[in-house]
Image 1 (cartoon, rainbow, N blue to C red):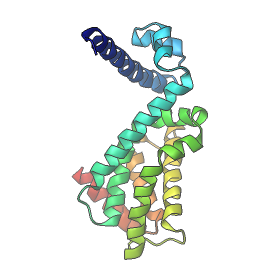
Image 2: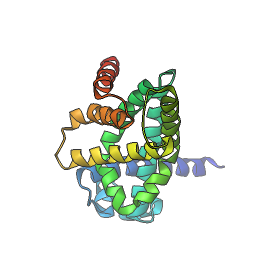
Image 3: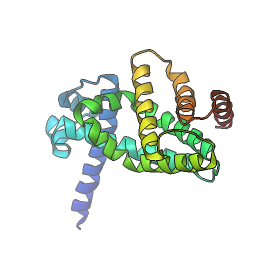
Length: 207
């Protein structure tokens, strides 16, 4: 690869990263932002944006991929070295929420363009991790549910989406949502509310 080719590739990569960063900010500010608006905000011509992303849907899909990658990283870091299933779930949900809160409007937007099924497919590895934790908790008697762990993991996922929507609709304060969502997830797994609240308070204080 020649120096000129390397330079062009680096410039193209830098442009792509800038477009994604600007697009995320613009779409969070205005979910109806057009490709023209994004191009202007990024300081590039419209053709450059379309050169990287053939459609608005493709751009949003790429942003969702980035969000899911960030969620997976947060989940892995939160659970590292934690052996108690309930604490693992609590730390995971709190960490995921901290990342997800940045993408609440993007997720709502993505449900219109990427489709719910597309989002579910992207979240499959995270859901599998959660199902494993839930199975450990059910086996240990920490959790109690009539649902098997994989189904319960789906319920937890939908609970988090519902809490996001509640925040978006102004029904729940954003600064309370992470802790509330975590207690809700734990109680949905059959953990007594008092124990769930105490666990979340302790984990939050340590974060």
